Image 1: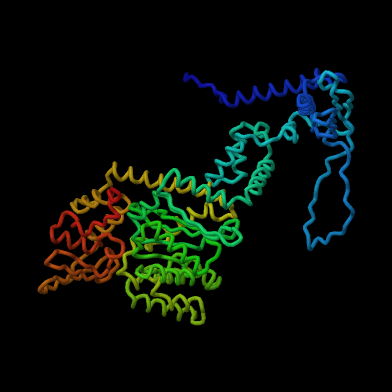
Image 2 (image 1 turned 90 degrees about the vertical axis):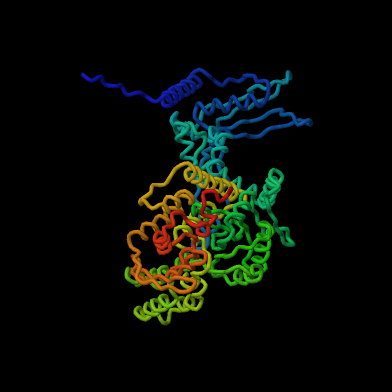
Length: 599
């Protein structure tokens, strides 16, 4: 017979069971054996107060401080302590309220004229005695299971405050923080306060810091620069002393820009903070094709001069090294500032932000048409040539009778700024290849921007989130440097790609290797004096033209994948295979995609 294992009760549960029993015993002891008596003496008035409150907590009522008399030295001569339900709330004059104009606040009456009290008086020896008392209450006392709900039994402890702020650092709100406290304490009665108490405390905290919030934010930057001289920040205030512009970038962000600042995404579409200031981060992609942070600012308005100040400040922070490409939204002021401060930087618009607006611009009937959405995405994301985009766009407009759609007309007029087919020769570092990166960055920032946060609250959340982002990069670095990717072919060039590229980049390179093996077929070869022109087909059933310059064995493909994202395409890899090239030439190993790019 197989022996059965007895179920064990967790030690934490046993502890709280005994704790609850102990508290109940103490309450019963006070209720039955501790009696208030005239003549009871205490060393000081505070001891008398604490005794009566402890008595009240055990019996089941709350205490309110009544009248007192002080002598010329401020010493209490006598003091009265009352049941919290003593007296009646003073009624205000009845004033008719228009429900349509003002929301009526409904309150519950707690006072019922209870006469229970104690009167404490200082005697000739300097001690305090209970000189008079009344013990009877005209209302029901709180039962033991509800004693923790008495106001005198509720307070937000320092431990609770620490947990609350740690939760906010992790973008966990007050309600969820209270759930965590409840689970950790072993029951609501052990938290020490209610969820409403915690919410009120945090609301009071926000009100207290409101007037000094911006100064605390700037002071924090000052402290960070004292600890790290590489921490960069600048700010401006208006004539009223109000913060109107601020930018910051820590040392790690500035170092990251030195490695990955060839392409920058600048976004000013995030929700504003508590003071209606716009959050404006500078980001890009790192060697693992993850979002990476370069710096950020807050702007009080979106005027040209605000963006000019921000871009100028950003350039100072990164050693005046302008990016080769900047991706922004369609804001006119931003475009003007970009042209002024970054005249030699290619400027393109974010496809993700434009396509995100499509549903609200085309009407509900087309949103349900899967064929329409499929054709639009194919036109925008899949067109490889200008001619292909033009023909597809015109066909969609005609087939769905969208000639009068002003928004689509406007997007077509600026098509050279956001359709990839018009700038395939521009280095993009993969920043426009899919919507996933934009969605990832948007999700990252919305953790602490999608709410009306004060500056201090923002920083608590932002700093933690940035540390998490950098931890993810360290994890990927560790994985890339200490593990080897799985190879799917016997081609040496695939093995070499796994040796030099990070795992995420290698996945894309490997896709090209597999496509070169499975789908690329040479159609024609034309020999010229200094070059060889090869045409081939691929799995997209497109005819590609690869030019091989015989003097330096360099290849240029009409798909222009390498020029756009820095990864050799399947067509060039097919040419390497034909030429018995077993390792990627140095020219085709983009430094920003290497495992050792930061060394």
